[in-house]
Length: 117
Length: 113
Image 1 (spheres, each protein chain N blue to C red):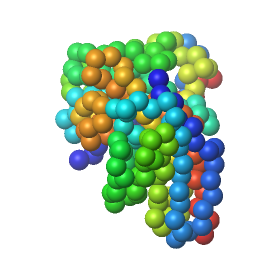
Image 2: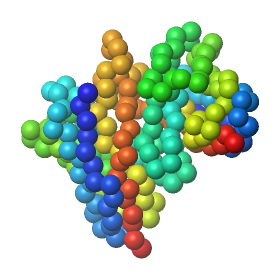
Image 3: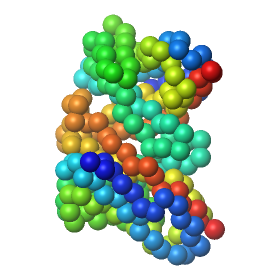
Image 4: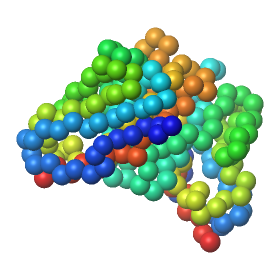
């Protein structure tokens, strides 16, 4: 199992450009998540999905869009990049998000470091 | 939402035990306590979780106070590879039966050789 994979590892964007961060998991997890982590801070949830075709907003969804057409893939779209979106982006997946179950363990990808200039 | 409080940083020596504290005085009776850690330049990884009883796994032990208002993550013999940020988390209900993790700043653990 590759687990959770993310591409690209690094990217520099100019203000106003758009891009898609790719995330794929091969563990057949139904839940997937996107987080961002600013320097010296904890992670903040951007969007999450409880299954194919179902997505919902997290704490900081503005400026981002997601889709979930398959169980495996959960891409994150930035339409008009802004310097405030400079961050490290982590994708994660879990079998379930139910309280307390061991399935709640989230598996994280290695991250995408994005700089917007 | 129940919140957690952790020290910003702690230091340990290699091969010594490390006790990482977490306060969660507003915890509800059914909140599980989760610990994750984040090694430098990597995504977070799950460490352990528990409800009331102390828990052990291959990575660590979790000691939960009898009143559940605090817990301690125990690394029995710290190695250089254990240097990381450790997050104590109480999953928050995000609607229905769904819960989400909220990561604070955590505790930065430094391990000295």
